[in-house]
Every structure is written in structure tokens, then in C-alpha cells.
Length: 105
Image: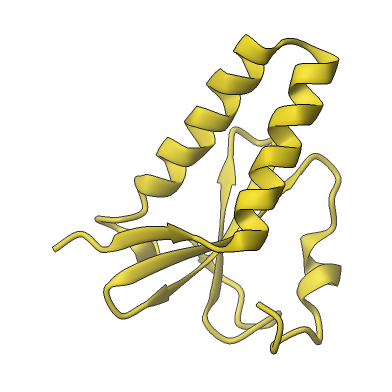
């Protein structure tokens, strides 16, 4: 049975910031298409949540999955839900943010 996909407040804020950035650099239409595609990619984790790469070296239970070779999506599977914890685009170093930060995420 597919799990429910939920977005952590941090992930939602990152998505909004990404939308605003793309709108400023390109257009609102492009931003809408790109962020919608990210959301759909995340929702696609519902039936197969363990397909991402385990990153227990960073945080127990953390998994990552790439998106269009431009972004990394960090998430965790917890019971009947997939929690999208963060989205990191381009050269953002998500491992530095998560290292030693088990309590915040």
C-alpha cells in the first residue's frame, strides 16, 4: 500500500524559495513547471519509498534521491509516511547541513 507523502516546513520553505528564484531568473511559468515536477517526483516515492539511497552516514533513516541531476531530495520513511525533509539544488552542500544535526530534522 502506498505511503502518504508529507513535506516538512523546511522543505516547503525551500520549494517556495526555489520558485521565487526561478521566477526572478527566468519566468513564473518555468518556475511553476519545475516546482510542480519536483512535487510530483516526491509524490512518486509513495509506492516505492526505499528506492532512494540510504544516507545513514549522515543521519539514521535519511535517504536521498536525485531530481533531474540538478537537485537532491532528502527524505525519511516513517511507518506509513514519507517525510520530505529538504531539497537542495545546484551546488548546495546538503551533507554539511545534516552532519551533526540529528535533532533539528
